[in-house]
Image 1 (spheres, rainbow, N blue to C red):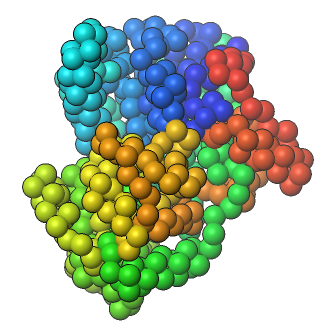
Image 2 (cartoon, rainbow, N blue to C red):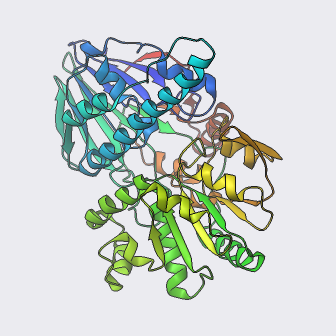
Amino acid sequence: MALLSFLGAIQQVTGSCYLIESRDGARVLLECGLRQGRREEEGGNRAPFPFDPLSLDAVVISHAHLDHTGLLPKLSAAGYRGPIFATEATCELMELMLLDAAHIQEHDAEWENKWRARLGKPPISPLYTSLDAEQVLRQRRPLAYGAAHEVAKGVQVTFHEAGHILGSAIVEMVVQDHHLSRRLVFSGDLGNTCSPLMRDPTTLNRADVVLLESTYGDRDHRCSSDTLDELAAILQQAHRDGGNVLIPSFAVGRTQDLIYYLGRFYQEGRLPQQAVFLDSPMAIRANAIYSRYQEQFDPADRAALQSKSSKRIEDWLPILRCTPQPEDSMAINRIRSGAIIIAGSGMCTGGRIVHHFKHNLWRSECHLVFPGFQAKGTLGRAIVDGASTVKVLHQRLAVKAKVHTLGGFSAHAGQSQLIDWVRHFDHRPELYLVHGELEKMQVLQQALHDQLNWVASIPEPGEQIAL
């Protein structure tokens, strides 16, 4: 029988990685993601791959976020030169995300080595380099949604709309093994049906094995209208308090949602601030890619954009100011009030948001809005959990800004949406929960049993099953 190995995002949210091997000799890697969050988890990024990269026939990627793609340059550095299959939009987004990730790896290694030299310690090498990322880009092979393609001998892949970010896909993989056909469906990151811009996830009904993400397996998101009303109230209060609003945001997906919502507030006269700064070079470039793929947007949202002649995402929010250059970013910190600052990274693990923390986090008149999940071990999670002080750029800062968490902005499906998606499958395929913290998986596991009488398994890291 064909084998499936659970190598990453097992009882944790990040580091997606699964290996499919057929008895006919085909070896396909599904995802090659970066571990993010706690130091011990990130340390796993430097461990050797638990397989021979040279033995792979193909790599299949569900979407561009780094927890699904971020180790591809390391795979390339280890000698893999085969094809990397993804949707067309994902292939474009991978370019900006992987080149940026490589730059960060190089910069962080350079910074670390300055300190190590002063301590008499040997230097470290970056996890991978820009040259490794550029090699990955030469290996991309774009596939259209709904088009079946043989990625390796006897292994056929079809991408379906996942509704998470632009280009995100549910992966349907059919493995022919000694005249037997086995169908594996990987949900990827399923989108929240209340999110703007993206279409709803495609429902499928045939599978032998299903891998289901469970990031929010323990709860449903708030009603989007309530969340929007709360955000509008926060912006009004920040205006009265005379401070700035900081919004840490992922460059791809979350930022475009925020621009859409703030643009709607602007059109409705509900945005009191006079300037919105997008202080993320990656997000600015991602906007351009989103603008080129507007035909993949939800029809109602696409019609709204077109009603205002918004050929670009930025046109929808006229007071948006993009600050790609470092000097433009630094100039924002001279503004003491009345600004909304959207900056990366989404979990505050780096990027320009930490520089804005230095100037705003300790000010009680400022507001800090988290529009999404903060993983354990991240700076964002520490603040959400109520830390009174945090270490930022080698300085300890008081957390005096008012902190808000808006779970309704998540681009992930909530518990009910996950259950609704999986209930469409006929004949009860084997169901495995991935991409979630263990306690959240266990809550979803119980809900699936209670509502569908369906026994879902929670695999162990490294576990191997027969397809």
